[in-house]
Amino acid sequence: MPLDIKICGLSTPETVAAALDGGATHVGFIFFPKSPRNVTPELARRLREAAAGRAQAVAVTVDADDAFLDGIVAAMQPDMLQLHGHETPARVGEVRERYKLPVMKALSISASADLLHVAAYANIADRLLLDAKPPAGSDLPGGNGVSFDWRLLAALDPGLDYLLSGGLNAGNVADALRIANPPGIDVSSGVELAPGVKDVGLIAAFFAAVRAARG
Image (cartoon, rainbow, N blue to C red; front, side, top):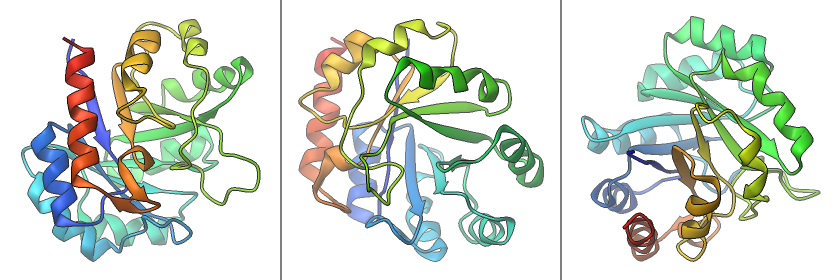
Protein backbone atom coordinates (compact mmCIF):
# COMPACT_ATOMS: atom_id res chain seq x y z
CA MET A 1 0.00 0.00 0.00
CA PRO A 2 1.49 3.39 -0.96
CA LEU A 3 2.47 5.69 1.91
CA ASP A 4 1.76 9.40 1.63
CA ILE A 5 4.57 11.56 2.99
CA LYS A 6 4.11 15.24 3.72
CA ILE A 7 7.04 17.53 4.46
CA CYS A 8 5.55 20.56 6.18
CA GLY A 9 6.79 24.06 6.94
CA LEU A 10 8.94 24.44 3.83
CA SER A 11 10.30 27.88 3.00
CA THR A 12 13.23 27.56 0.56
CA PRO A 13 13.64 26.24 -2.99
CA GLU A 14 16.41 23.86 -1.85
CA THR A 15 14.30 22.13 0.77
CA VAL A 16 11.27 21.94 -1.49
CA ALA A 17 13.50 20.24 -4.07
CA ALA A 18 14.83 17.84 -1.42
CA ALA A 19 11.28 16.93 -0.39
CA LEU A 20 10.22 16.32 -3.97
CA ASP A 21 13.35 14.37 -4.85
CA GLY A 22 12.85 12.20 -1.79
CA GLY A 23 9.37 11.29 -2.91
CA ALA A 24 7.07 13.58 -0.94
CA THR A 25 3.44 13.29 -1.97
CA HIS A 26 2.56 16.55 -0.18
CA VAL A 27 4.51 19.73 0.56
CA GLY A 28 3.16 22.06 3.21
CA PHE A 29 3.43 25.82 3.55
CA ILE A 30 2.48 27.48 6.82
CA PHE A 31 0.54 30.73 7.10
CA PHE A 32 0.64 31.51 10.82
CA PRO A 33 2.58 34.57 12.00
CA LYS A 34 3.56 33.00 15.33
CA SER A 35 5.31 30.13 13.58
CA PRO A 36 9.01 30.22 12.68
CA ARG A 37 7.90 28.50 9.46
CA ASN A 38 5.51 31.26 8.43
CA VAL A 39 5.64 32.25 4.75
CA THR A 40 3.83 34.79 2.61
CA PRO A 41 1.33 33.69 -0.03
CA GLU A 42 3.63 35.10 -2.71
CA LEU A 43 6.61 33.05 -1.53
CA ALA A 44 4.46 29.94 -1.29
CA ARG A 45 3.24 30.53 -4.84
CA ARG A 46 6.83 30.59 -6.13
CA LEU A 47 7.86 27.56 -4.10
CA ARG A 48 4.85 25.44 -5.01
CA GLU A 49 5.55 25.80 -8.73
CA ALA A 50 8.21 23.09 -8.41
CA ALA A 51 5.62 20.70 -7.00
CA ALA A 52 3.21 20.97 -9.93
CA GLY A 53 2.51 17.48 -11.20
CA ARG A 54 4.74 15.92 -8.55
CA ALA A 55 3.13 16.57 -5.17
CA GLN A 56 0.10 18.24 -3.61
CA ALA A 57 0.79 21.75 -2.33
CA VAL A 58 -0.91 22.25 1.04
CA ALA A 59 -1.70 25.63 2.63
CA VAL A 60 -1.69 25.30 6.42
CA THR A 61 -3.65 27.83 8.50
CA VAL A 62 -4.77 28.20 12.10
CA ASP A 63 -8.30 29.48 12.79
CA ALA A 64 -8.09 31.67 9.68
CA ASP A 65 -11.01 33.83 8.61
CA ASP A 66 -12.37 34.00 5.07
CA ALA A 67 -10.43 37.13 4.17
CA PHE A 68 -7.12 35.53 5.13
CA LEU A 69 -7.95 32.33 3.27
CA ASP A 70 -9.12 34.30 0.24
CA GLY A 71 -5.69 35.90 -0.06
CA ILE A 72 -3.84 32.60 0.27
CA VAL A 73 -6.00 30.75 -2.22
CA ALA A 74 -5.84 33.57 -4.78
CA ALA A 75 -2.07 34.00 -4.56
CA MET A 76 -0.81 30.47 -3.97
CA GLN A 77 -3.52 28.38 -5.63
CA PRO A 78 -3.01 25.42 -3.28
CA ASP A 79 -4.14 21.89 -4.03
CA MET A 80 -5.39 21.40 -0.48
CA LEU A 81 -6.15 23.42 2.64
CA GLN A 82 -5.07 22.21 6.08
CA LEU A 83 -6.94 23.62 9.08
CA HIS A 84 -4.75 23.29 12.15
CA GLY A 85 -6.66 25.27 14.75
CA HIS A 86 -9.89 24.85 16.67
CA GLU A 87 -12.10 24.83 13.59
CA THR A 88 -15.46 23.16 14.19
CA PRO A 89 -16.91 20.55 11.84
CA ALA A 90 -19.26 23.26 10.57
CA ARG A 91 -16.30 25.53 9.77
CA VAL A 92 -14.56 22.71 7.91
CA GLY A 93 -17.67 22.29 5.80
CA GLU A 94 -17.85 26.03 5.11
CA VAL A 95 -14.24 26.12 3.93
CA ARG A 96 -14.71 23.12 1.64
CA GLU A 97 -17.79 24.71 0.10
CA ARG A 98 -16.28 28.18 -0.29
CA TYR A 99 -13.05 27.14 -2.03
CA LYS A 100 -14.02 23.84 -3.65
CA LEU A 101 -10.74 22.41 -2.44
CA PRO A 102 -9.99 19.30 -0.38
CA VAL A 103 -9.62 20.09 3.31
CA MET A 104 -7.42 18.27 5.82
CA LYS A 105 -8.34 18.86 9.47
CA ALA A 106 -5.71 18.48 12.18
CA LEU A 107 -6.72 17.04 15.54
CA SER A 108 -4.56 17.09 18.68
CA ILE A 109 -4.05 13.74 20.39
CA SER A 110 -2.59 12.87 23.78
CA ALA A 111 -5.04 10.37 25.26
CA SER A 112 -7.64 7.90 24.05
CA ALA A 113 -10.43 10.39 24.86
CA ASP A 114 -9.08 12.71 22.16
CA LEU A 115 -9.98 10.13 19.53
CA LEU A 116 -13.65 10.73 20.29
CA HIS A 117 -13.41 13.88 18.16
CA VAL A 118 -12.46 11.87 15.07
CA ALA A 119 -16.01 10.82 14.23
CA ALA A 120 -17.28 14.41 14.13
CA TYR A 121 -14.77 15.34 11.43
CA ALA A 122 -14.23 12.10 9.51
CA ASN A 123 -17.18 12.53 7.15
CA ILE A 124 -16.69 16.28 6.62
CA ALA A 125 -12.97 16.69 6.13
CA ASP A 126 -11.39 14.99 3.13
CA ARG A 127 -8.61 13.80 5.38
CA LEU A 128 -7.47 14.05 8.99
CA LEU A 129 -4.06 14.80 10.43
CA LEU A 130 -3.51 13.35 13.89
CA ASP A 131 -0.90 15.42 15.67
CA ALA A 132 0.48 15.44 19.19
CA LYS A 133 -1.17 17.85 21.58
CA PRO A 134 1.16 20.85 22.02
CA PRO A 135 3.08 21.26 25.28
CA ALA A 136 1.65 23.62 27.89
CA GLY A 137 2.44 27.21 27.03
CA SER A 138 3.25 26.60 23.37
CA ASP A 139 1.96 29.16 20.87
CA LEU A 140 2.14 26.58 18.08
CA PRO A 141 -0.56 23.97 17.45
CA GLY A 142 1.98 21.80 15.60
CA GLY A 143 5.68 21.59 14.82
CA ASN A 144 6.62 21.24 18.47
CA GLY A 145 8.74 18.12 18.10
CA VAL A 146 6.63 16.05 20.50
CA SER A 147 4.82 12.80 19.83
CA PHE A 148 2.02 10.80 21.43
CA ASP A 149 1.47 7.12 22.16
CA TRP A 150 0.95 5.68 18.69
CA ARG A 151 -0.62 2.56 20.21
CA LEU A 152 -3.76 4.64 20.80
CA LEU A 153 -4.45 4.57 17.08
CA ALA A 154 -5.22 0.86 17.15
CA ALA A 155 -8.74 1.91 18.19
CA LEU A 156 -9.36 3.76 14.92
CA ASP A 157 -11.45 2.48 12.05
CA PRO A 158 -8.91 0.71 9.79
CA GLY A 159 -10.35 2.58 6.82
CA LEU A 160 -9.78 6.07 8.27
CA ASP A 161 -7.74 8.25 5.91
CA TYR A 162 -5.25 10.22 7.98
CA LEU A 163 -1.68 11.42 8.29
CA LEU A 164 0.27 10.72 11.47
CA SER A 165 2.19 13.71 12.76
CA GLY A 166 4.03 14.86 15.85
CA GLY A 167 7.70 14.40 16.67
CA LEU A 168 8.55 12.14 13.75
CA ASN A 169 12.17 11.97 12.62
CA ALA A 170 14.59 9.56 10.96
CA GLY A 171 15.24 7.85 14.28
CA ASN A 172 11.67 6.95 15.20
CA VAL A 173 9.69 6.81 11.96
CA ALA A 174 10.23 3.06 11.62
CA ASP A 175 8.61 2.51 15.02
CA ALA A 176 5.74 4.82 14.10
CA LEU A 177 5.08 2.91 10.89
CA ARG A 178 5.27 -0.45 12.65
CA ILE A 179 3.02 0.48 15.56
CA ALA A 180 0.40 2.67 13.85
CA ASN A 181 0.65 1.53 10.21
CA PRO A 182 -0.80 4.89 9.08
CA PRO A 183 -1.80 5.63 5.48
CA GLY A 184 0.34 8.76 5.61
CA ILE A 185 2.91 10.61 7.71
CA ASP A 186 3.78 14.27 8.21
CA VAL A 187 7.11 15.68 9.39
CA SER A 188 8.24 19.23 10.11
CA SER A 189 10.56 19.86 13.06
CA GLY A 190 12.07 16.39 12.66
CA VAL A 191 13.93 17.52 9.53
CA GLU A 192 15.17 20.84 10.96
CA LEU A 193 18.47 22.07 12.37
CA ALA A 194 16.59 24.74 14.35
CA PRO A 195 12.95 25.85 14.47
CA GLY A 196 11.98 26.77 10.92
CA VAL A 197 15.37 25.82 9.43
CA LYS A 198 14.83 22.75 7.25
CA ASP A 199 17.93 20.76 6.30
CA VAL A 200 18.42 18.97 3.00
CA GLY A 201 20.46 16.22 4.67
CA LEU A 202 17.86 15.58 7.36
CA ILE A 203 15.11 15.43 4.74
CA ALA A 204 17.11 12.85 2.77
CA ALA A 205 17.78 10.86 5.95
CA PHE A 206 14.09 10.82 6.79
CA PHE A 207 13.17 9.38 3.40
CA ALA A 208 15.98 6.82 3.68
CA ALA A 209 14.62 5.73 7.07
CA VAL A 210 11.12 5.35 5.62
CA ARG A 211 12.41 3.26 2.72
CA ALA A 212 14.40 1.04 5.06
CA ALA A 213 11.39 0.54 7.32
CA ARG A 214 9.17 -0.44 4.44
CA GLY A 215 11.69 -2.85 2.98
